[in-house]
Length: 163
Image 1 (cartoon, rainbow, N blue to C red):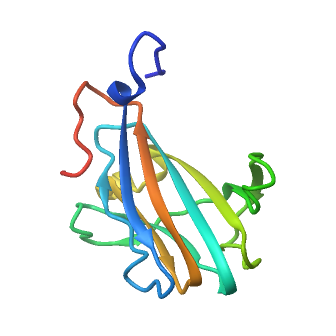
Image 2: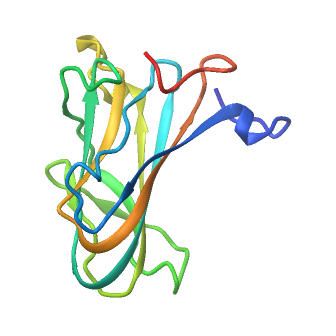
């Protein structure tokens, strides 16, 4: 299940732009659900550009039994990587997450990046939960994107947008 240097990355991972997040994120910040049945891991990349008078976005993870969001509930996570000034450095800092949520930085005029890594065994597989998404709510005066990189495909050509 490890990545091989003898193949293109695009053959070994699925790259999904889950959502654009906007200044009045309500459902705008709801990332698309993806099925993780055919993958071992997912890396979430959240890029944010702050304007002025910023209200940080509240980031949570959700899990469901189908990509339609069936039976949605919270997905626990305890760490993420953060860079609250991408223009100054590319260094990511490991940061603890409390209560399965965090709020993006509110410093005006900064570019931010957050990385969350998830193993599929973190999902409630006993309850048939194998789909996941990111939710970003309550952001003001900032824009950005949420992307997923699914990897560790269980077989070539594994689909992520369907159950």
